Amino acid sequence: MTADEFWHGPLDLARAYREAARIRADNRYTAEWREGLYVYSALGAVLARTLCGDKNAEYPDAPLFSTPETAARREEERQRRRAIEMRDRFEQVAKRLNKAIRDRQGENAGD
Image 1 (spheres, helix red, strand yellow):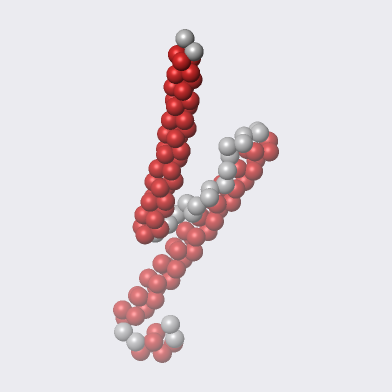
Image 2 (cartoon, rainbow, N blue to C red):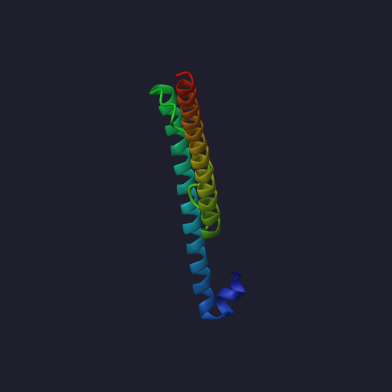
């Protein structure tokens, strides 16, 4: 806010500048907090892997915070990956069952 705006501008303008400064400070604080959470996650994963031998400790592969649009996209991607995983499991079970059936048919043919 310029000095001229401060002295000769409308009162609402100073209020709007103060509100904008407060919002910027809140956004900066939130961004710093999120950055700290990412650092915490990374250090936790590294320490769990090195000190405890936990092979399942991984750094998050996707952002922890997102907009509703990216959250919806991420949810769709998660569902797609889950469907592929379920299909692969089903195919494995079907192969095992088919092999067991063929083995039994082979045993019965030898009788």
